[in-house]
Amino acid sequence: MLQKTFFKSKLIVRSNRHRFLDILNLCTSARKALFSSAGILARIVTFYTRDFGKVTALAKGVRRPRSKKAGHLELGNWCKVFIAKGKNLDLLTEVELKKPFGIEDFSESKANKIYHLLEILECLTPEHQKNLQVYILLVNFLKRISREENFNLLSTVFKIKIMSALGFFSARSLKDSKTKNILEILEDDGFEDIKQKLNLSQDSYLKLLAFCDSMIESLTQQKLHTSRFL
Image (cartoon, rainbow, N blue to C red):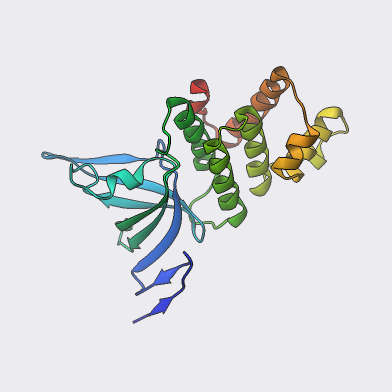
């Protein structure tokens, strides 16, 4: 029987059938309902984890009125979860809420911004491939959304950096131009430095965002559904 424990939100293994994950709940269109004659029994929920990348698990009973899991599994919430390894699907057994990005100071505008970042992450990332850079990027940008920072800038920087982190984009491969210089800053610099160096017009942001969305849709071969709600 395997018996290992690591603290500070790292992996905890109590047997070869269980794991404890420090996760971000990124369920968007990937959330599916399982039905019976009695109604919805469970949902398949997608998470983005620090240690395992994107994973899915079966969350039983989350639609029941007294379910303790339901409120913790809102889109964008940062949680710890206890997952039991299953034959076909892993089973979500426990949830501990760390930061309620999805419901804290809730507004429709804020929710749409969070859902947009999560949709991009879900579309671009493969299952079970750890990428700590992407995980940290998502946590930091969800925190910035909570502080109501300029979302045009946030969205542009997030899209450039996540494509770069996943190996889909490099500004250095472009021909020399003013646009290349801007994209290099967006790709390489920290967010606070970017705010100091760039002072773009609304029209410039829209062009950059259209470029990023077009590239993401080309990579994933699917439309970004949340863009129209921003």
